[in-house]
Structure formats: C-alpha cells, structure tokens
Length: 484
Picture (cartoon, rainbow, N blue to C red):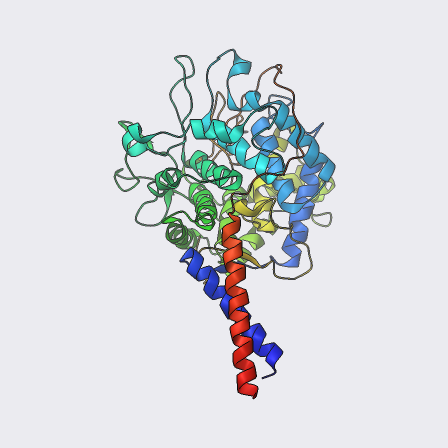
C-alpha cells in the first residue's frame, strides 16, 4: 500500500479514536439526504417564504403569529432559502420578544413564558443573531433565570415560567425543556441540571412524555408516573436536544439519545410515517418531520430516508397538485388534506394548517439536526456526505423538532408546540405559545449581525488536532521504517 494511502487510513482511524476518547460515545456521521429530498425541502421552504409578509407569518385569527413565524425562520435557516425573508423574520422576532414570551399584549404584566424564552434563545442562535442582545434582551440570561434551582427538589433544572395570579400555573413541558437545552448549548455553557431534568422525562422504554405534571402535581420522573403517555414529537425533540448536549459534554446525554432513537424506530409505520399522541395519533407530517430529523441526527439513515419518502408523498408539485398546483412545494398535514387540496385548492381557512405542516415537515426532508442549524452548511442536491459528526450512536438501522413550547392563551390541538388556535383538524406542532394581541412598543432591535456563541469549547478542537497530528507523525515514522 502506498504511503499516502497508509497515512490516510491511519489519520481516519486516529480521528475516530480521538472523537471516541473525547466524547466517550462512538461518533456517527450524518449522511447527506437524497438529492430528491433536498430539492423537496427547498421547494417547501420557497413556498413557505412566499407566505411571509414583512417578515411574519399570520395566524388563523391574527396578522402575526410569532410562534409560527419563529418556526418558519428555523425552517428557512435549515435550508438556506431566501436570505432576505430570513433577515426580515429575525428582525421582526427581535422587535417582538415580549409579544411572544409574555402576556403583556393581553394586559397581564409580570408573566414570562419559559418555553417561549428558551425557543427564542435557540432561534436567535440558529438564525445567526446575538442571543445575548436580541431586540435589547439577553435571552441566555433570561432563560438561565427561569431554570429551577436546587431548592426545587426533583424539579431542579426545569425551565419554568414566571407566573402571576392572573396568568395561571406554569405549564412548561418537554418541548420547552428541549429548547432550553438546545438554546443554552448553542449560546454558552450548558448546566448539567438542565440536561438531568430532561433525562428524567424519559421512560425505561426509551420514549419521552410530553408533560412532567400530573393531576396531583409535578412527578419526579417518567417512570414514576403511572400510565405515562410516551409521545413521538416530544421524543424527537428530546433526542435532538440530547445530541447537542452530548456534543457539549453533558453526562448521560448520548446514551439517552440513542435509546430514544431506538424507541422512535419502533414507532415508525410501514410507509415511513409517524403519528403523535392524543388528537395527533394518526400519521401526519408534523410528527414525521420531527421524527425523521431526529433519526437523521442520530445516524439512523435508512429510517430517516423512509420518513423523508413519506413526507415527499404529501407534497404538492406542479405536476400533480391539481387545483392546488399554484401552491407547489407546500406539504399537507395528512393524506386527507392533500386529497382535498388537489380537488379544490387550499382554502384560506386551511392555509394556516399548511403553513404549520410545511414548516415542520421540511425539517425531515432537509435532515439538518436542530443542534446544527446555522452551523452546518444547508444541504444541496449534490449527493455528497455532510461529514457532520454526531456524538451519539453509530449509524445502525434502529430507531429515533416541532419546535415549540407550552400553550398560551390560545393553544393548538397537537401534543406538540403550537401557539395559535388550531384549525378544524389537528394543526402542526412546532410553534411555541404565542399571544395574539395588538402590537405594543418593545425595545428597539439592537443589532442582529452578531454571531452567536456556539458553546463548543475550542479546547476540544485543539485536543483533536494534537491527537491527529501526533497520530499522523507516528504513522509516517512507522511507514518509513517499514519501507526501509
């Protein structure tokens, strides 16, 4: 074997060894999605971008739905589509922080929604804005201030809402906790307590429950709750958050993510689709999009590809869109919605559901993990591997973020996050609680150009570099000795 090839093999081995030594978990490579699925993701993002007006997406009853707007921003960031719309949406979100994470617009002062704050922290980082100065708010500091401390007992590490007598009780859930982990990991150091609370929402079977609370109050863990309902969407969010946490060095995160991915694979339908829980039990593009994205992040490439195929089957195209061909690129919530649109077009009543479904579904087509959006180059239709290392399980075919938070004054039907009133059929689940109300004056946006701190310590990269250099030199010397 020529020396150059011997060195290449040795350096590859050294790289894998170095990563395994640093993370303690076999590294997995996130494979590039099929070119056809990348094209489908970009077509979906292009349609969604066309639904924005002045940087916002509307709700069913209001001209701006901030939770859905943020979901759309994340979706566009995952695909790299339409930079002007992404920039406008980032600016609008920064100008309306309190419209989203409080009830100020409803005249209820003093309330801060923990899940919405954490989602804003994540979205600002993913969009390339400065999360410590987003519209004049330090979202990282605000999120940390809402994490329950040691005096909270088994609720320690939980993202909570700052409630008042008029706001009602805290309803934070596993979506909120996942966003807290993702946002804190992307913006600086990640407190282990925050990860530990998320880990306690995982049952022994591998799936995660949506709500940590029962009729009798908060329960200490998923296994302590009799008959806990395990939820595909919540598990997909948690798996991706734990992958990011594992990359950040959090204890126990990698193994839990792998176990969650296994559980997801067991829930996948024969056609590759997924259903949620409660009113979203049937196969739908929201659950399939999040689960497919999580499977890709965990290195379960074959299962992720099956999910992407199921999503592509729900997409309108110019050739088969029928009466809705003008909306080519949009993704239906389910087969009933697709059939109805082909027959009669997308009505204004149904358009809200299509926006929500498309924003979440395209994540399962693009297959960029939530923890890597804004860091990795968006996929292209050129079939080349992305080479993004994931600190979790190896890519073995076994199985697996809507992004959003607890429901505010108006909730959506799905067990996942959506912030506005749902349409007649279960709506997508990616939006966090939002509050539709008249616009108010908020601190002016102060600069969106700052790059977010990713939370990745440079020391780890230096250690990898040193290990690779050392390994390469050793192999070079051995190769020359053998040649001699």
